[in-house]
Image (cartoon, rainbow, N blue to C red; front, top):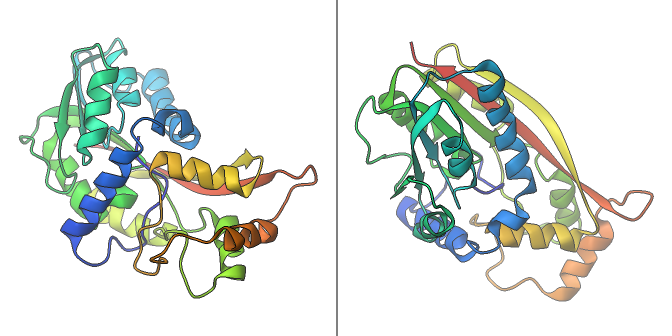
Length: 275
């Protein structure tokens, strides 16, 4: 499970520096991540249900959890009857260490970049990747790597987020601080379709809007912080956001009749089988 924020069109600037920043941010959130990962569990469970109901993988399949985070879904995969060996890969060394400490099963943990996987060709029957590709410089590079390491007949299951995610939070910040970005941007649905089908012929893409409730905008901001999902774009403020500006943003965030708020997430799931 990875984070819920990303950048439309890939990371900008020095790729190595940005990747190190991403890895550090997730590593710093290693102890709070699982308790904050409501959306991540929902989207990952959606893919798990397809595996379980369709019996989509053959017996003793070797599975890779790509962008494994703390290993929540790596452990779920390892517990499935039709799955044999499981490996978890993540860019963040801190997350991989947390995953190793949380697991008592024989899962192979690897620190690695999804765009340049340190894994041999045709080595897995299943690749499961939950909310990771939005952090990558170019998702097409990840799809090519997945295609390379999948065995013939192997399956790829990927989730991501699309343009329009956290639109309420973005609008509230635009009202009070229009000169700076506070919410990362995401691929449009059209752009994602083009990139997927350029690398994964006949892939299926499913989309839906997920709305999660929060008691306040501050609770939403706290959840993002506990996920390690802070905004890292070039337009961010260099200094810590002042409390007064944060309170002003909260006043502009749309409220429900009972005073709570909702946050919208534009979800996408990608399914592909290697012929």
